[in-house]
Image 1 (tube, rainbow, N blue to C red):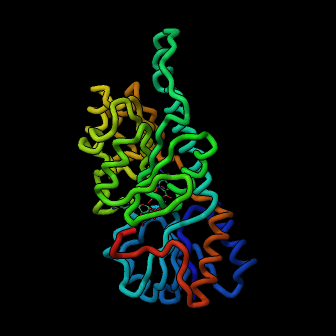
Image 2 (cartoon, helix red, strand yellow):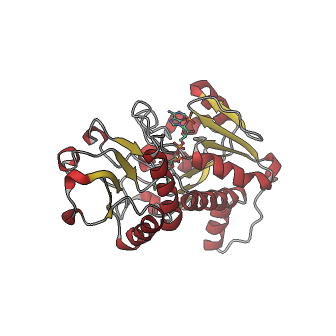
Image 3 (cartoon, rainbow, N blue to C red):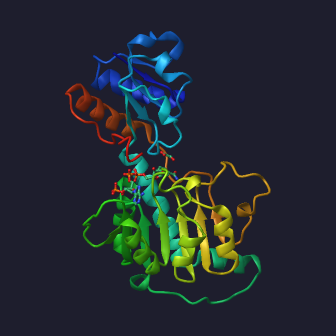
Length: 308
Ligand code: NAP
Ligand code: GLV
């Protein structure tokens, strides 16, 4: 029952040491050419190797190296195998930091001040007190909830939207299409932390942007496929949206001449909002392996029907 990890050497070494120390009875391998494919029950990877089901006929669990699982072709998962996404404190803390950084920058109108600086203009822009600023998150999962928790001390009016109803202290929570409309109409800074599924593809489109109040801003840290990029550019150019932090795009990287690279109202980062941290991810994976070996459900099990 080998655990095969396909990742870069530094990350693999951290996992190898952690497995040797904490789960010495589970053989750990990282070289696919040196392992008996029949023995591979657990596979950790970002993208799937070709012919997954034929190559590893006894696969039970596929662990995604990352929080998202949209990068894999789920139709190639062998019928008996389950997919588990990454939930680990290092990645969550990076996302929390990025969201706080971008929300504060948008709250204090940093993109507009950067443009004024470029033009050598010393101008006081209007500002809003934090307790009058409405900040909402699409997605009340691991990352959406952690980001909202980190924003609480600033005193913003916080809200979140999910598929199922939620009751989160200090956060107005909404669900379903009607809930989304209501939340958007009361949002000044919108953060996207949804998984990419059939239902959420291109959710950030012209219609959604038009439901935000004029002058609202966006933090796009979900997946490139969530957003109609032309619609964002149009909403920024008409002034309906004031500014956006964009960490994920479609494609990645963007072509060199794409307008998002140089738009004065956009701060673009190259899909760096969060990364898996090797030591905390190894701890989380070993805790999950213990659950699996005890016949229990691992944390982050993907529901094939919901698609996340
Ligand atoms: P998660 O725990 O699975 O949470 C997903 C949330 O989205 C849940 O609250 C879920 O609602 C909600 N949701 C899903 N489909 C929905 C729909 N159709 N309508 C309304 N709500 C819906 O995921 P996570 O760990 O927080 O990660 C979220 C995403 O962040 C990842 O999938 C990935 O796309 C992105 N990400 C980006 C980076 C980066 O560097 N930019 C890094 C890591 C992750 P329920 O609670 O009702 O199920
Ligand atoms: C990164 O984008 C991840 O999904 O972990």
